[in-house]
Image 1: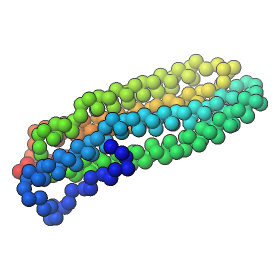
Image 2: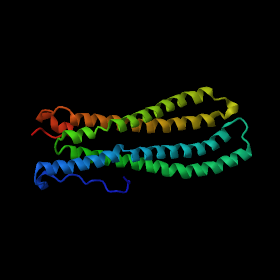
Image 3: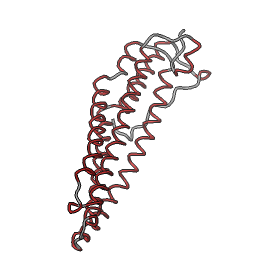
Image 4: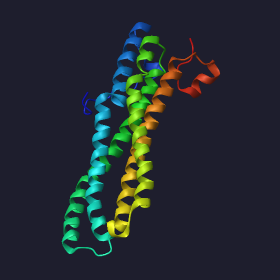
Length: 222
């Protein structure tokens, strides 16, 4: 589904709800939950997540050419000029990649809010079970965990293994920046996968007492 396709609107307030019967409400709820679930964890969303991550690393890698060229013991003027040119290109890639990443995070927050609102309308076992999306959740979890692992390794390996003649502080700065990008994206993906799965488990689990249903964001038992 294209990101430009409008999201399902929030469900109408209780006083304006006009479904003819529960079956119609369940059908609209199922459609909204399916669309919102794909927009949050679907294959297209995962591909875009990886594309924004690749653009961030590419932009920072081009900036790193300049950092490494000036971070050694005796900077080569030609290498510095090449590094400046690469850094300009890198900033041109990095700035829109950061903007797209922030925009995607805001979009995910909106999707989660509407997902919670539609889920709170009612309960329906088959629809709620599909919302778990275990395969997609596992893909997000494994990829994000791999990003965090590589970022952790990079954050320690680059400073420990860098010599002054190999690039000195410039190489360390580049390595730490690349590790930070890995960590931020990995933690974002982990938070999304774990949070969505916990939400789906609560939705399909036993109904809570009426006194606790409001705090959980799920519908009260009828």
